[in-house]
Image (cartoon, rainbow, N blue to C red; front, side, top):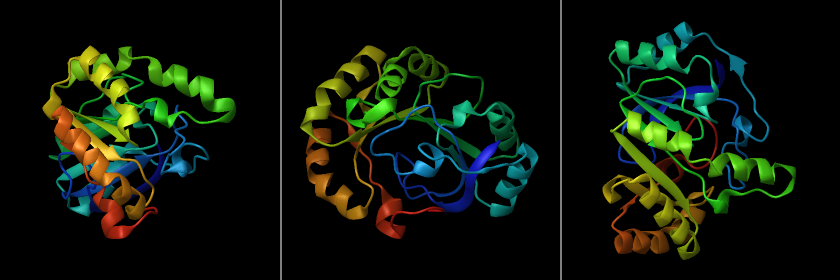
Length: 224
């Protein structure tokens, strides 16, 4: 698999925020979000090929029950199925984080899907391709039907994002308690500046609020 980094840290987002976890971050993405906070896995992908067996061994040595397979877009990787099956066979709780634009075979204990809305659209030559890819809801619907244990996270800038989010949630039939809103931002200060607005939007719509603890605790950067 093409791997950007693998490290032990604390889950910063979603229903498992605060959980000590081992992260396997793949490199390569089929989207180009304007606010991407891991450009080394998308806009300018880096990394090295690492065998699945070696990743399983790294996870074992890390000594964490929870393993998060993230990216980039991990579902682009041909080896996603043997990796996730191997992790679960070894007794790990596996979260797979994806934008939901692909639906290949794989397994997990928690599907963490982050559909991208128009606030992610980049400028320039990637704009049309990015919009076409994120707008295809068929893979997302397929994933949610396969994995009843899921969370759906949205990056939110403000009230202007809500009509799009509420519409998508309704079309997909996702229950409100499985929807999480998190403030857009690359730093703890940027997240904090939007936190109050996003919190009020959660309260108004019956959605959950997701922190971004890794920024609070460690700041932006790799290996956190």
